[in-house]
Amino acid sequence: MNDPSRSQLLKLARTSINYYLNNHRYYVLEDLEDPGLLEERAIFVTLHKAGELRGCIGHMLARMPLYKAVIEMAAAAAFDDPRFPSLLEEELDKIKIEISILSPMSRIYDYRKICLGTDGVLIRKGFQSGVYLPQVASETGWDLDTFLQSLCASKAGLPAEAYKDADTEISVFQVDKFSE
Image 1: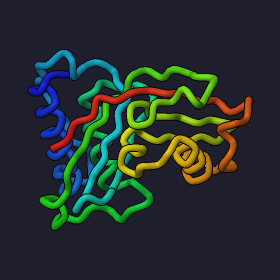
Image 2: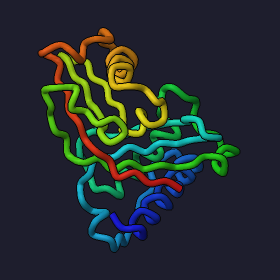
Image 3: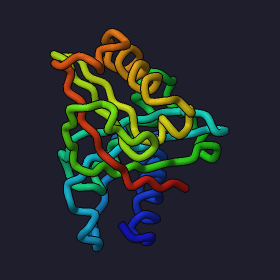
């Protein structure tokens, strides 16, 4: 994705959050000129405040055009992440927006093939699943086992060692990440 498109998406995310704060509904964008923003893509929008996580919501699978996913996920990260209270108006100038556009998923059969800091990981066993974006490993400094144990136990609600089970599905993906 080129820099003008990235800038447009970051501006759109901020506009979406501001619009939702004031109108309690999603922003509607008309007259979109960039065809790349019409592609269906899986994304996450992450908000940081003073360097700390303030919200993160996304789609693992492409379900809508990129621009629309940014509009909806930006508002969801600000107002619907159950780990945080809804964003307040006085916080708007204090948040930093990060967008991660996901590559298609690729299933792997050996967890040792995960490249920390490059691969995002989706763990799935039965009806339980959890995901970490690639930046989680970089931000925490975890080794591979600690990363996967946390993903299993904290995100997927599985036993910490579930990633070693043959019936646990592991998929990896990469992201195009950019921020304000």
